[in-house]
Length: 392
Image (tube, rainbow, N blue to C red; front, side, top):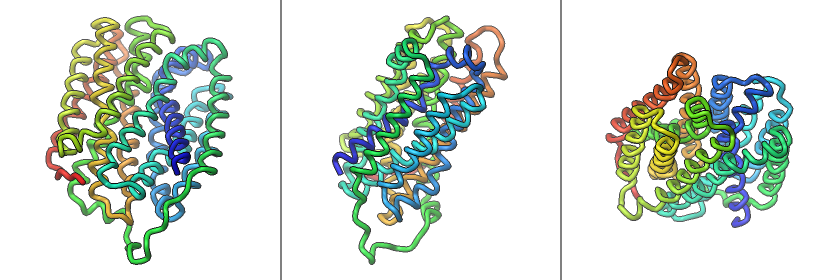
């Protein structure tokens, strides 16, 4: 199981890479196939939507088939196949289709790890393990910055994506070889029920918006908007964008690790998330007020957002406390559907915002995007305040 978890984390590294690599590739895709920021926002958003909608069958598969085949088969067929399609793209439409396939292929990896943590480890360890997985997986976010910029500059974007596709197939093969499915629950524990039973828990309704707010702003901005913002406002190329993206990505890694054990340190899950997202909201309002304050000021604010906006594993840990054992698989996939699906919808919406406000000054569209995210986080915080705290 230890080797299986290592390769699940590697699979999540690839998932983070795929959801974030468009920011650095923006200038190349624009020059070679005419992809606009709106095209890439749509493709990026639909990656998240495909990832989210795939959670519906994945939850059932985890509880009935187990994580081994549930993770390995989609990653190979859809993830690897989508990467090769992306490398062969001749227009924005193919990029969008490829991103949809990749999103569906990456969808089982993280929740398969969560399922194993929930079934094989003490409940009090869930938040730390989830945060560590997010933290290590976020190195895929890092790989999609300066390293990707150098690879694309040296080898071209098509060969680079082909190489990542080959790595995706190899990782899927390792998952099939090394993951061992947890033992089935005893017969008396296999209580009949469906995911709809979770809807009767009031706190999950208040936690759900925070699943989006605790991930979407940092993920969407790092995954796409940091590139066009730095290019349009400051004239940075792929290397400069990669460096700022690297700083933000490192901050997101640090934030994922930092959030993980805080629930045990402060004996609360709810208020760790609440305070962290207040700080993230402040960063977003600052970016709205100072959209062209200089490269370094912008970079530092983005890094602060990356750190404080990495509360996804802490929110997941909070929600996990409300799942009965026989619904763990469907529970974690339900929250993932909400969090990742909402992130995808946010990305599509911000694409429309960018198109609607594409007027001078160059910073105007990005200021509106930051304001949109700030208001959404504020609303999510108000709702989240009504949730019940729960620790193990």
